[in-house]
Amino acid sequence: MTARENDAKKQYNRMTKEPVSRLIRQLSVPTVISMLVTTLYNMGDTYFVSGLGTSASGATGVIFGLMAIFQAIGFMFGHGAGTNISRHLGERNLHGAKKYSAHSFFLCAFVSAFLSAAGILLLDPVCRLFGSTETILPYARIYALYILIAGPALSLSCVMNNILRYEGRAFFAMVGLASGGILNLFGDALLIRGFHMGIAGAGISTAVTQYLSCVLLLLPFLLGKTQSTFEWKNCTFERHYIRQIIMNGFPSLTRQSLNAISTMVLNQMAGRYGDAAVAAISIVNRVMFFLNCTTIGIGQGFQPVAAFNYGAGIYSRVREAYRFVLRRSEQIMTVLAALSFLAAVQIVSLFIGDPEVIAIGSRMMRVQCVSMLFMPLAVFGDMLFQSIGMPGKATLLAGMRRGGLVIPYALLLTAFFGLTGIEWAQGLADITTALVAMPMCRSFFRRLPADALRNGGGPQNS
Image (cartoon, rainbow, N blue to C red):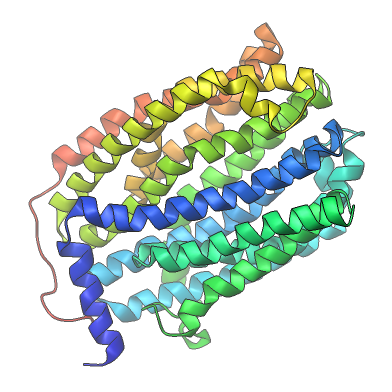
């Protein structure tokens, strides 16, 4: 048995036999850390740029939607391949796993490079599309250019991060993402405060560190630390693999794309109330994503456990894993929501001194703190169905939470309550999605069959 085959056998035993609570903690902790650090560098841009004024701060929020597009492409290919890779490894089909990893990597590279080039050619229209006002546009144009240059690296990093997680190699994913996030904070401080490069400094720092992260995430694949590989010979552009990647990655594409679209729409709607409203949305979105990192990170630790054991036919571990992450996440989110609700004004004040921005942002943040209690139900339902290969249900839940409800709620509520309607929209969408997800998950677990272990032999290498 070769070293790689022996490693594959150990990994199979780990994913199917180690106690679920311990396994999820091992996979979740690196993911939570990497997400927290990644979010910190996004917040770092917001913090350092806010010193340049309200319009510059609003620009980072506007272009956040553009970044979400590249993340959407990366997550679609990454999740689409990752769910299939994990189930194939659970079935001990190594050849199939390698085909999925190669297809996802090269297809993502082609698509993201095309989008980057198109965005650079249409820079001003893109900035206006994502909600830039005329006073924000000069800042948004500069920041967007560097984000578009970084786009392919951002997308490919999402692909590799998800494949590493679905293989159960969350530590390597953490190192790659966290290193880039830490370096970006230093880059922001150096270029904005040290060299006085303004918002261009934030953009350059983000672009450079995205490519550094991409290289670090690539290293485990090049050094043979993974079962998946990115060999061109395995990228045969067969319809079956492309269709499965897109179908299983579609919930992620829906989630991230609607996130970008809802951000764009909310920015445009907020722009009617001035740059302060746009800046407030930008700050609150970054803060709430940071607070929600724990639930999302725990969920991403849950996904490979669910996918791997579902592929292996050990359905009881899928049920046990779901119950564990839901219980643990609800405990954590209750504490975070209470503390953040009480300190909303102080938190927003950390980023900007504008009283109008603080007033709008703190109201919006408190509404979303209430919805944090419902978020685990919505998020884990989406992640469960995506992991086990039920993309239709996953897409429904992802679409409801990230845009399918946010935009209608915002349009309806602003007609009656003005700016308050924008402040309430995302929180109500989270609550509604949770109420839909609960019966769907309950029905799924009631219908799960008894465990049916598959493929008693070693990993397939054909």
